[in-house]
Amino acid sequence: MPLMLSPADTATRRVPDAPVVRASGRSAFCRAAGLSLAALARLLAGASVRWIASQPDTCQRVYFANHTSHLDALIVWSSLPQPVREVTRPVAAKDYWTRGIVRRWLAQEVFDAILIDRTDIKVHQSPVDMMLREAGTTHSLIVFPEGSRSVTGEIGEFKSGLYYLAKKRADIELVPVHIDNLNRVLPRGEFLPVPLLSCISFGPPLWLERGEPKLDFLARARQAVLALKE
Amino acid sequence: MNDTRTIALITSVLALLTVATAAGQYLRRHPDRGLDPAAVRTFNLRLRGWWILCTVLAAAFWLGTTATVVLFGLVSFWALREFITLTPTRKGDHRALFWVFFLFTPLHYVLVGLNRYDVFSVFLPVYATLFVLARVAFAGDYKRFLERTAKIQAGLVVCVYCLSFAPALLQLPLAGAGTADRGANFRLLFFLILLVQFADCMQYLWSRMLGQRLVAPAVSSNRTWEGLLGSATSTALLAAALWWAAPPFQPWQAALAGLVVGVMGFAGGMTMSAIKRDRGVKDYGTLVVGHGGVLDRIDSMCFAAPVFYHITLLITGVRPG
Image (cartoon, rainbow over all chains, first blue to last red; front, side, top):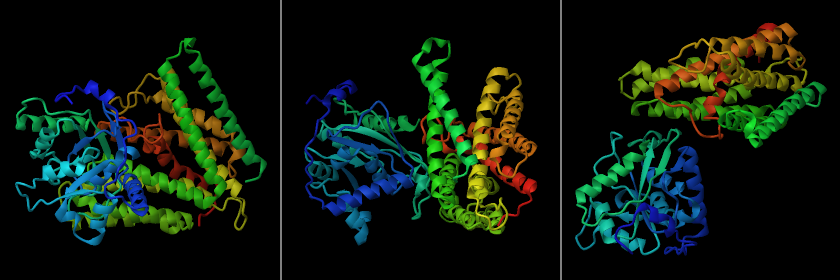
């Protein structure tokens, strides 16, 4: 796989009928729960989905989005077409998603999330390594490079995880995702949603250029998300 | 609904739609007629939207009063979410909005469905307003307080309260107390919807053909005084011609109702246009292809429905409830 790919190449990189192998082998009940939750969340958040110069694909990808609400991962996941959703796993904070039986069940069984321990990061067990190990060669990931939910609604600086992901696996497509208005549906610190209309925009994939400095790459990735705002 | 007048009304509307659809398809297949292809496409898309509207309405009518009230309740809910989505709110409004969406809006339609005119006529304008003011104050954010509460209140009144007068027409005891002639009520509601849609089209046509003087260029670049006059007169004429379909009306009364529907529909369009201009958008949403948002489709109806309802009360002298 070449290190650099122009966006034009992506059309030819469609993976037909990617084998769907669920490591966890979710039960039919959990799958049904996932489907109905996704439908409910989309109904509630009135999410309209746009693919801008981009196509849904089951090839291995990292979707990186701005983080505004607890619903973000769920809405991005449910915005993907069913075959793509099957191979896509959200990356979430372990401390939040293992608190209580319901959250743990949702994260582990329904969404098959990759839980990252934010409080206990070790050198030999870095979150990026763990994500890549869990992703294997088939799964795509949903990540929020800001690290935590934005308070002001502005998109904050990206943490370096995305850069190391791109550096370690140059073959994975990095797809920018912009989430609009979801912070008003369920703002930080609220638990009752207001059913406003939100918009999820997927942009064209990008890759780490050869020798591109970390800060340049992170700024470019953040700009790619911002560019989807309109 | 098995009476001849209902069937005649529905047949005329279906015939009109069929003729319009045939014309639209003919124009699409013959692009050499000198008409703007984009305009033909818009026309065909609008027609498709009307077919959907007619099918949904027919299904609701057929299922009965409750189904129709529920249908209008869902439309109100969706229009309100479009309205609030486009209106900047602050975090301090969040909990007030939650109750507005999940308590006040459904409860109002329950009251409409229960035919409690005495309660539903004050429920939103008085009690919901008081609640919103107090809840936002309790949330502790006083910045632009009146502006924020006024936005929520305007959304509630236009999208929920005003629109609900359309299904409330189904509850009026038109044929005298105790008589169950539901057909008359359905015809009255259908009559209103038909007039509102017709007034919208006429406004567009008259503005395109004869429009010279814009009412407010900064608000809308295609709504003219000629469009307003033309639409009000044409709608009055259509209403007079269809007076037999609207149970309590004499021809001149139907014409008066048509005139008012024309003017109110125009006012509704202008109002929503002003809000959209302020927010810098063209349409409210993307539900039905070619029709903008739900709110774009019902703005005229929201303004016309309460006035039509009260004109009916005045003319017929029936008392609601």
